[in-house]
Image (cartoon, rainbow, N blue to C red; front, side, top):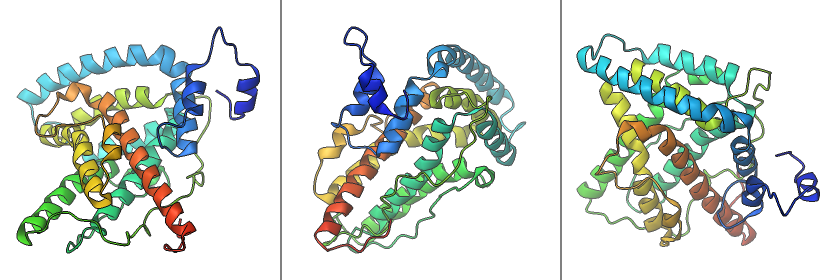
Length: 299
């Protein structure tokens, strides 16, 4: 799919329609436009069509043997620092520009959603730890691990205060949307060399065994199970907004019934999509409030 969608429309063949063009043009699901274009191009890439099926098989086989290895030698290979150096190098050298944009943007979006929840519940004060990487060097600071830890620590701190103060989640009026940025996230330049070919799902499938190998079993399982907290975060947001509409867009659910770690790669993509749709809902709300003169523009 090209940047100029008009050229795709001019070449539209009713006998052979491009499914990713159809989904890009569809407006039923709220999502950032650049994110959507990057995701559709990523889905339409040769890597997704030809490499992904092979990488998925390799990934599951490797995860099986690493699982056995970790059972007998649980702490023989544990190095989050080395893992994140490998991730930083791999993302820079082999992952496509579109996939890198989706990965980097996810940290920004997730940080803003958690800050939104923390600042919009009456009687609650939680200091968040925003993760907003600007380059590949930022990844080396245990970025992916901190992302998972932040999520669980946030849920624990929030509910500890709710119990201690006997508070039911209720949104402030007016809502504080100052942390929600409305830009299109096109200010980071990602490499686009001949080796940068991996699509998002292929990259995740390829990196997941490394994640499993270099982290403790507890860290890896926690990272995998954290994806099902999408439902939890969506419920918090629905209670604040007093609207359950976006809950229908959440696919990772039932955190009290964890899935096997073998589904982590696919669920991670769904996790990113859930975050993007909720963030877009908040962006649209901020734009409306700005139009009504209620919120001072920030992003």
